[in-house]
Image (cartoon, rainbow, N blue to C red; front, side, top):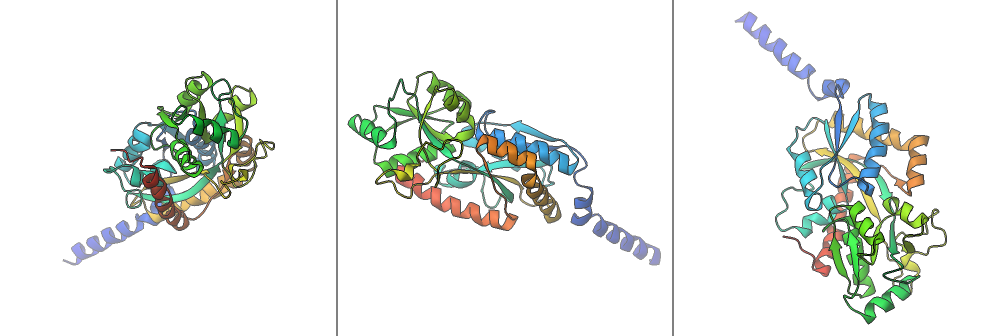
Length: 326
């Protein structure tokens, strides 16, 4: 009996020793997957690849960015949800997947609060309102509003998909500007912008990073930014809030990294520390600023509270715009 008791005690101690703390010490011991629930070329993908490279260097393991687009980001989020809660599958979350989707979809197959553990915010992305001059020859928001009001639903806008950040921001703008404009959803930001440049659609309100090459080449015309202040990259382009009647308007995007609920806290804390370190790195900051991204980080607890606030905010916009997706 004594030997059995000693053996059981040793096994208990071994179990304690191999608990969350020890798991964090050895983590990561193999490559980590960072799931992007949208197609390559959009803001989510750009941020994931910049962060993935630097996080891999800090953690000593490669970060494999895996695009799993579909259904407004739901396909990728579901995939991340289905993986073990061990910190080896991370997810790039955004305003749609962890903000508006809770209201957009009547039967959302994941709970943005209960199914995931937030690790940290990563970046804020300014939205830019841009037009194809051949389709909609306007130079400012006032001209845009007058033109569209004169021909309700006679113009359309592109987005990276129903429930995407661009979709939400444009519907919010349309509500505030009291205009009617048709939504043309695409399977990703890249194809949406390609068709906009090709003259298939009229305008877009989306993140600056994927828009930048089209703006610098003159193929698209920026008429306003949706941030609280002008962008250093576009100093002559006013904010939407500078337009009379739209004072205070702001619709920036945000992005953060999460993992499956139940992941040991020491691992979550280790990932949070790595993200903070990555965002303080001069090379990361240089890449972010070149893309028009605003680096931002916070604690897992603060990120969790932020997500709950975003669900309330964008839920209100979704309801007012009547854009429920079944």
